[in-house]
Length: 122
Image (tube, rainbow, N blue to C red; front, side, top):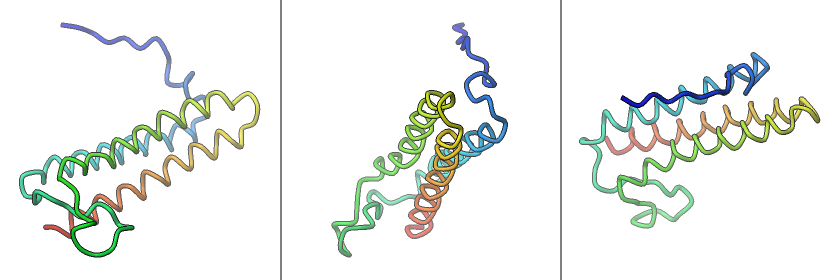
């Protein structure tokens, strides 16, 4: 059995408790998006309306696996903003706070989008 050991303490990665709450909520939202998609995967149609900016019709449709782009994008945003927040922590706390808040806001919008897509096709 392989054990993964991360030598970084979470308190060291995100030292402020408020920031940690934002990132934790973002991770929970991402897990909720993945969980809802996994639970309803068999009942989803082969194509789903993913592209909101396209005109009405077939241009809005995408294959079902592309639905997983939304939680993946959310996770990528968490990682990038964690790195940016960590790098800017010594310069200014405002940038780290803004990155944490933006992460939560973007993941909330992605969750609303994915749940709206799922609700519209079921």
